[in-house]
Amino acid sequence: MPRGTFSHNYDPDRLRRLIQEGKTAREIMKEMKISKYTLHEQVLMLQRRDKQIYEIPGLLEAPCPEISKWKRYKKQGVIFSEKMLEASGFKPGTAFEMIVEEDRIILKKIDSNG
Image (cartoon, rainbow, N blue to C red; front, side, top):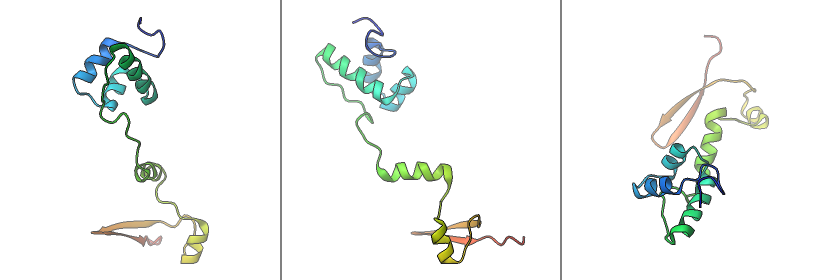
């Protein structure tokens, strides 16, 4: 099967070499400049071609929901609904200092007067 016939940047020899070197899915995607979906597609094509099963660390692992939520909040910060703020006596835009103590996180209102 010639390179690039069915999938973006398909190079079976290079892919096989990276797999044999023990590279993770993330490392292979970065080096080959392909998405996880494309890598999955290309591994299936390579397995069919070689009549062999290849295991790539991280390829079939779905991100856990906690990690997905954390990535979203990492960009936006912690967001409280307006109702929750009103119920606690705070207003939208109130700034807090985050204090981490062993197994809990404490939000302390930052005094806006200085």
